[in-house]
Length: 116
Ligand code: FAD
Image (cartoon, rainbow, N blue to C red; front, side, top):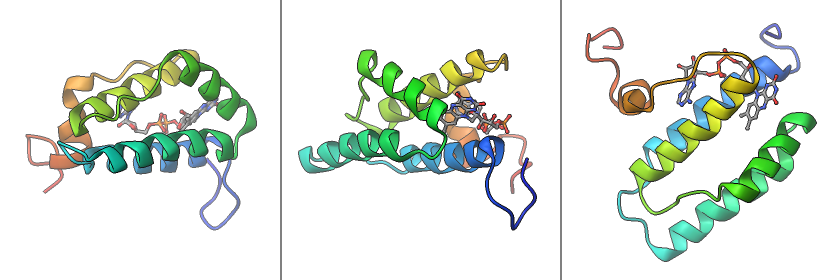
């Protein structure tokens, strides 16, 4: 990854971006209003246009066409980002993340107390 204090490369950019995206989903409402749902759809569309890794953003936009975001609740949006991230993990030859562990990873901390 890029040295701290130096421009982002695709690894440090991706790591920081997933951290933001999964955290946003983890704090999304359980029952969002229509306006919030519309805003989240816009956020994801605009994010896909401005993500500053061109091949990453192009592939993500292609995937988005067939897989529109599920913005209807926190758990469904979190799951949708988990699947989106797993698509990239697969593409990069990494192992897939178990989406049952989303809350521990991005909201509550691990059950063994290692984040306390
Ligand atoms: P990351 O993949 O950054 O993951 C960070 C942490 O998230 C992991 O340690 C794990 O705890 C957790 N995590 C992993 N998978 C999931 C999941 N499915 N759900 C929830 N949490 C999870 N890089 C490229 O080289 N080519 C690309 O085309 C590309 N496309 C990208 C598209 C997008 C939209 C984004 C945001 C990033 C993209 N990246 C791409 C970057 C790539 O996904 C990684 O972020 C980067 O390679 C660093 O990987 P990492 O192993 O540090 O962990």
